Image (cartoon, rainbow, N blue to C red; front, top):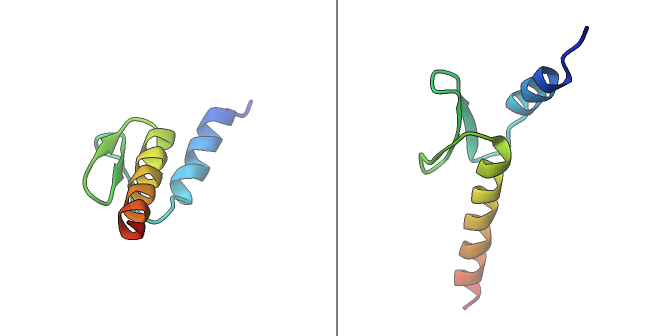
Length: 60
């Protein structure tokens, strides 16, 4: 029997976007500025937030 959650996690960890990596020792996702998150979605939201804030700062 296949475990879809495990397959999903392996796929996500193998294809992480720029600015996020997976720390297998701590079982956490880490952003480029060394913030740790339990889930990929949290880390991705944070990276998107920083990118958005940076673009708003540059536009002002």
